[in-house]
Amino acid sequence: MSAFVPERRAAAARGLFTEAEYAQMRTFFAAHPDLGATPLRPLPAVARALGLGSIAAKDESGRFGLNAFKLLGARFAIETLLADGELRRGDTVICASEGNHGRAVARAAREAGCHARVYMAHDVATARVEAISGEGAEVITIDGSYDDAVRSLQADAARHGWPIVSDTSWEGYERIPRLIMLGYTRLAEEIRQRGTELAAPRVVFVQGGVGGLLCGVASYFAMHDPAVRVVCVEPTSAACLQASARAGAPVAVTGPLATAMAGLRNREVSPLAFNAVRNIVDAFVAIDDVWTERAMRTLNNEGIRAGASGAATLGGLMALCSEPAMAAVRDRIALNDASNAVVIVSEGVTDPKHWSAVVSGN
Image 1 (cartoon, helix red, strand yellow):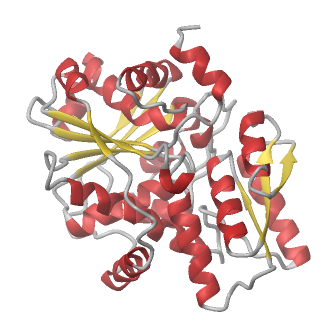
Image 2 (image 1 turned 90 degrees about the horizontal axis):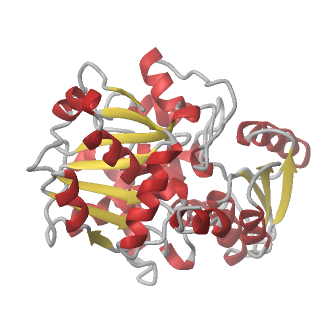
């Protein structure tokens, strides 16, 4: 594993969003009482084993009837675009995905009376393709990575005038990723609200990827509870956020994307997200698959069925607590026997074959 801790966190930084935008997010979810909160599940045995005060898992394996957090952003963005007249019923929306975002966009589009096309890497798990197709979307597979799929859909969008609903940004394309990430802040608000019932979180572990969820969660706590430490977790072979944080600017990682953490299998960060989080994230941790597989088995023993990307945060926490070389990192983020940690379990089982092999030890 590897870790990078910025020299200092910018005390005055408050993340990407304004109070008016948070109010917009709250108004939307208050008008949708059917979109209830996901559970924050205490893991006392795991906390004792790791020598921490408490651990709770934010279980996104059943968010709004899907098995990942992504519908928070996709539904908020698509319904906002419809209300603003930037999207109409019958339109075709497109996105790139490793699985969860594509399914969320497909579901949100169908419920809004729109069509969806989802661009995916050629080697994505069959179960993820079938899940997206089952939502009524057309799946386009690309001979390349997620980042290649993004470039392919950009060309098709320009050719056909299709709106892109992406959670990653690029030059000239920021409004919709910003809406999606604003929707993700709801997850952080739910964690903070449950802190009145459980131990208030002091360290929150968040998946990396292109940085969308990380930006939403880190921005929320930077504004509303800046004492909370935020830790980003990525696969070693796809640690584009850690590499960018070390460089001080967005950089792409190279080499094979050899990881089962498919939802985090990205070479490039979202510039909009990275520029917001670079001053408000306390540590960037990269782990090998062995850690997320241990976390998958641990979560299963606790009654939580999590995919490799979903279990990555607990894997990162376990690695930090177990590796002697990480002592300085633990000190910097105040990870000790008084710590109340939250790990976001961002997805349930999206690849049943892989999950079964891991939890059975095969």
